[in-house]
Amino acid sequence: MKRRDFLKGAAAAAVGAAGFPMVLPSVVFGRTKPNDRIQIGQIGFGRIARGHDLPETIQHDFCRVVAVADVDSKRLADGKRWIENYYAKKTGQEKYLDVKTYGDYKQLLADPSIDAVIISTPDHWHAQIAMEAALAGKDIYLQKPASMTIVEGRQMSDVVHRTGRILQIGSQQRSRKPWPHFKRACELVRNGFIGEIQRIQIGLPTDPAGQEEPEMPIPPNLNYDMWLGSTPYVYYTEKRVHPQDSYDRPGWLRCDAYCCGMITGWGSHHVDAAHWGMGTEYTGPIEVEGKAEYPKSGLWDVHGEFDVYAKYTNGVSMHISSRYPNGVRFEGTEGWIFVTRGAERVTASDPTAPDEGPAPLQASDPKILQAEIPANGIHLYESPEQHLDWLQCIQSRRQPVAPVEVGHRSGSACLVAYIAMKLGRKLTWDPVREVFVGDEQANAMRSRPQRKPYGTNYVL
Figure 1 (cartoon, rainbow, N blue to C red):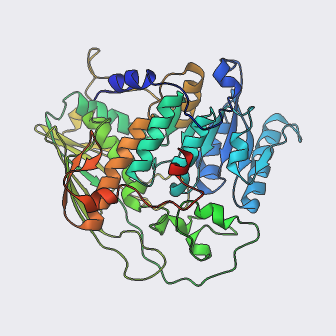
Figure 2: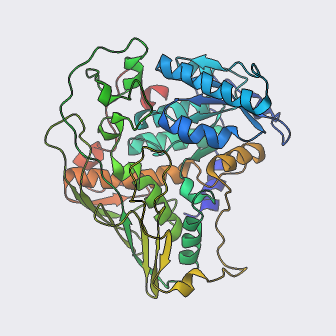
């Protein structure tokens, strides 16, 4: 399915959902015009929020970050202080803004003065908060991956389309800043400069295993039950959650209950680039086979070294492996293109390639990289920067470079791979119905049990 066809169908869907209070912000009634400020609430003030999402958003004068929510009161206070200090320095007014704080994000969503939200929470909270934000009439910037499960992702995409909200997934490799070479690579591939595409190789990093960690007292500043959300209740230990005295890379990224590992962490970026280059943004693989190594003990239990083989209806085969260099290699009948971030990272604590990594854009023949896309060729969406594109789309009401269904499809392809890795066998996937063909065990893994009162099922 092509982007324009999917979006045309989605636009025809009815707005609203029964049983949820619609708290509509001013943007719904057309107040937000080019000269108005978009009022933004930040949900989750952790490593990604303070090091990436907020700095990239708050710099734009046609928006204003006015609220922050976090389940950790220490981080909540830090978020308020960070935002207020930014505006005080920028304006020269010490008390320019009194940022609202919420220990419960639902109270932030109920504030009708807030037009949009940035969701920078752990992965297991992405889909639920995005759905509730859409039902509350907020536009949404959502950190990747779109969801922890295939079913959650479908629920979220459907709700966002029913409500007509603008949702941008944090797939920043689609934007000119900071990695313009991904769009360039995908345009060259889409326009046939390496011939007919046959194979794609994707290299992803892995996470190391850890030790057993003792039970610890729950910090008085942390609403641990809400942090766990829909996941099973387990004892608190700091390396399961986030550091209490720093903003280093948190331990939840290595716990299967809250993150599926690098197959979705980095995979949602690189599989998204592969889909963009193939023109398969609204579908997924049809066959997947995988294997992975898993820790035999310790708190951190996401996958280690792995291999995944996938096949698409266009005949392209995809190999995702921890053995390849970090990046995406498109192989065609007349050459190849390799694209990567190089040594750049989103935050200082991200695991990345060595400082002397491969060049960001390479080809079998350097002349391929100098090719000009003809005027009547395929020109992909031009996004200046992921957060700026989102803000501009809030004003224009056009769909952004990485809308919700694109994010769901990139994420679901990774989750299909995750399930194949867990089962260690070949699976047949129907990307239209989003089910595994003839495999009840695999289909049961498309969702996870949800602990009341949390979870996407309870939103619906």
